[in-house]
Length: 266
Image 1 (cartoon, rainbow, N blue to C red):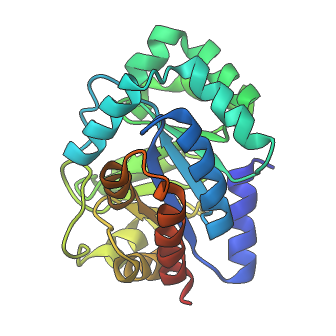
Image 2 (image 1 turned 180 degrees about the vertical axis):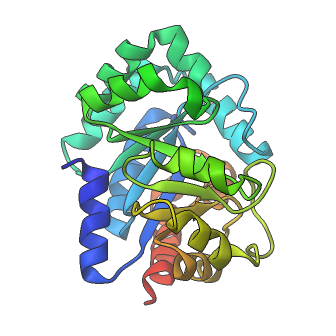
């Protein structure tokens, strides 16, 4: 069983919700990414999303755009990121998802990228700009490699399209709680339970909610409505503020532990 599937199955068995954390790979450098992955594992993060740096991250708000820029400036390339994941795997089995744009995969060669990711120890890919209707070859390659194909559902996605999207998913469904790009928000969306119920009509996969969650209380509210909460910009913003400070890893470990406490109801 894929690590993502195994983690969600264990959480369900234990009556727990998932904390999914996003960071930009290579921000501020790849050694920090490795250390943060291990720290997040210690802090109880269930799935780690690594944003693969790309020059035109159109689905991202300013915080994550700047993280991608810092990742590029630190020399983060797919081959170096694969090496970093392999280094993480020598010490941790935390489930890892790459948050990636299709252009980058296409430039590397889609089959090569998927196979290299699997060999490194990646568990799933979330491709931001690949329409499901054009993903037959991609999905077959993902199945062959044993990777989960994570798909997005938006607040504006009509019911019939939700059904078409989620039947292609594996691992979990990522529900975007707000229209627009990634970024921190003052409060969570008010219709989460209704939207999650709509998605659940079409799939038994776990549903994780992201976009805009910035503190433990918001994470708790979101996790209550679904199977997990995804926190990205709030974590990335702290990485930006701390930079290469020696306090980076312990400070982020403490912050994500507080998010986990909110998600787990501790």
